Amino acid sequence: MENTEKKQVVFSAIQPSGTITLGNYLGAVRNWVTMQEEYNCIYALADLHTITVRQNPAQMRRNILDAYASIMACGIDVEKSIFFIQSHVHTHAEIAWILNCYTQFGELGRMTQFKDKSAKHADNINAGLFTYPVLMAGDILLYQADKVPVGADQKQHIELTCDVARRFNGLYGDVFKIPEGFIPQNGARVMSLQNPLNKMSKSDENVNGCVHLLDPPEVIMRKFKRAVTDSDACVRYAEGKDGVNNLMTIYGAVTGKSFEQIEAEFAGKGYGDFKAAVGEAVVEELRPIRERYEQLIKDKAYLEECYRKADETALKISSRTLGKVMKKVGFIR
Ligand code: TRP
Image 1 (cartoon, rainbow, N blue to C red):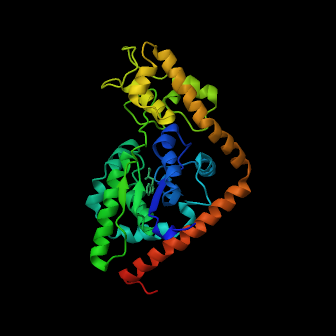
Image 2 (cartoon, rainbow, N blue to C red):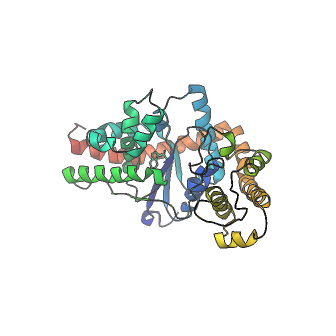
């Protein structure tokens, strides 16, 4: 590993709140894999974030291990990158408390995700849901990250992270690197196959709306065959054709073909052919991932070895920043 010092640091995290979906894969994880070549990558399972919404403990344990194995199966190389579990690294909860004292109530009240989530979980608008972006800011700032790839829905949280970091630096000097959030260009925004105006989500009411990374081929094919399209009966990317646009986005992301190429390929063909082709392309893309997952999930000892090692490294790096922060604030060391 030469030139390690010169490489920029990338940090990102994903919540293990259920299975990993095709949307998570094409929108985020696949890009995490690519970035391993060029950057020093630090990735986390943000399980502390997950409990802002009530979880079943046994299910949550399964989800965490499953997500860890799934993401490794996508191609995260634990020799190259640090892939750890947030709750195993105590510096995250600690810095979150400190940063809470440097974040204003009004700022957090403006977060659109908080507004959406509190409307959705009206019976449990807990303080964690409110301060969720501060924990996220801590995740990023602890590692002095240069770049943070995120989905469009997290952009506002990155802006808040930068605001809090600048405020802290303004008071105490250069403690935090100001990170740059970005939405990966090749990260596809995948929508529900049943309601293409909504993001593909594991909590979709209609099971056919969401493809899971580990869905068997026949299930994937069935979901694509049932995907919502329109009455235009023409494969082309255009406004108002949300279902077809989404299928084209998925097909393009998986095959590398442009929209023009896809339109040419399916000129004169019906949606039936098109949907089958998208399904098959996705099946082939996910096949090696599912096979690798099946091997990994059988070997719990190996998985544990991987995350223990990553947790330790993450603790070492993040402790440097936390120590600095605590000293600046005025705690006795
Ligand atoms: N909040 C992010 C999401 O739900 C996950 C996350 C937690 C994250 N901490 C992060 C993403 C730090 C980027 C950086 O998608």
